[in-house]
Amino acid sequence: MKITIILAHPHRGSFNHAIAETAAGALRGAGHAVTFHDLCAEGFDPLLPEGEIARDAPLPEHVARHCAEIAATDGLIVVHPDWWGMPPAILKGWIDRVLRPGVAYRFAATDSGEGVPLGLLKARAAIIFNTSNTPAVREQEVFGDPLERIWKDCIVSFCGIPVCHRRMFGVVVTSSKEERKAWLAEVRDMTLGTFPPIER
Image 1 (cartoon, helix red, strand yellow):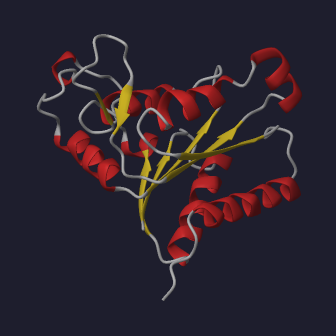
Image 2 (image 1 turned 60 degrees about the vertical axis):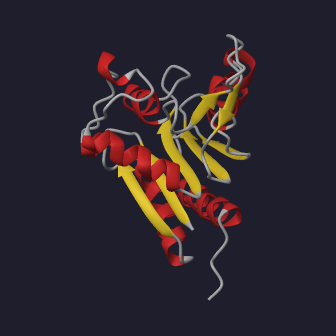
Image 3 (image 1 turned 30 degrees about the vertical axis):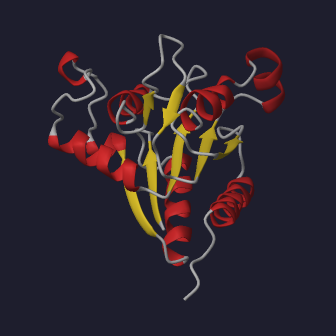
């Protein structure tokens, strides 16, 4: 299977990087083809220019490449921290520029403004790994975990991916080496549970 990993964290030594690298290693060891994008390291420009808004607009080469990859992928893994209950700006910009109409979704010809999408992505499953420095109880009781709704309802299902698993790890800033090791083991298990090894 072709699996795409999208990582959005500016610090190369972050736990987000460890999560993404663990998932990538597990997938490669299981025989999958992995496309790995560290958006910050690549300097992905999150700004959606006016000229790209139209469905058939000409796209810069690197954006067109991302679009082709996401259209062809069998599975998606996204790794990012919870910042203000949202993905980092660089990832939101990637969503704006890459999960575009005609690539990730379209609206029915009979749509008259209802905005009910037809998802176009062929990926059968997505995993969203998040990190947080807010205790889980406070996250739920005070904030309602907005990332759950953003990813599962507003993005993944919108684009036609039928299965979405999500795991928030925290509190990262006070976590021990043992906790992080256990969390990375969980990353590996979730990854291979969703994208099993290829039989040879």
